[in-house]
Length: 261
Ligand code: SAH
Image: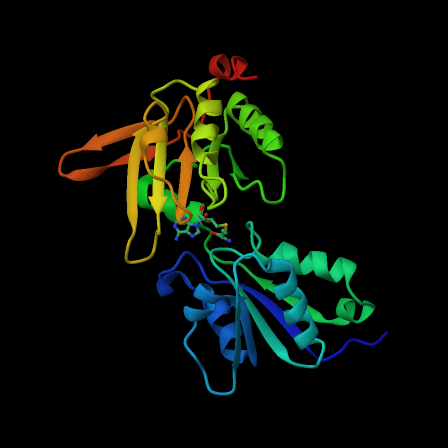
């Protein structure tokens, strides 16, 4: 089958501040004839003559991906936008799922993915280097996986000595998720383990707070919050007149490494 002329570009917009938009993303947005995405992300892209806009609701990822692919298959240059990076709990995988399951013609489309600054990197950069050693990334949303699996992954990550970035700490339907995760992590990590809350980073309402695992459940996390849980080695450097630096040292000496599961 010959390739068809349409194109779908899945674009990461970064965490919010336009300074985080890469030049590659800006160029791809400038070339697109149609723009798809969750409404608030589409709103971040300035309107342009000749570019149609197709905002949709948050929960409609599969349908949105299918619509964008269908439009591209008509020979149109389509942009599909995500916050942060499109490959991190976002539209890139939804597009691949649709291509895998969809009509043969979608496999002949020119599909490209443009990376963006994901929330955990924006939050980490605000505070120092909490992800300076090995780390892992989990979404606490149990929309697409059972909560029991999330608990087992939290156990494994804490026992393995990873710093842990938590996306989707709270969802409207399940407000207890974050407190449940903290309770789980406290089984493995000392109460003084540093925990960072980055809320709406790169946006006007940005707030970054550092606390401990002992106090983490009292801190408010919402749907715009990214949480980073440190390791036993993660340190806080207090500074006069400045906010603290939080970092995870790059090295683990052999004696400490032996103690890690
Ligand atoms: N693709 C996005 C993540 C989508 S999942 C990315 O790469 O960043 C949505 C979750 O991302 C939110 O619940 C929150 O945990 C995190 N998030 C997205 N934008 C954020 C921001 N500006 N500040 C803090 N966390 C953010």
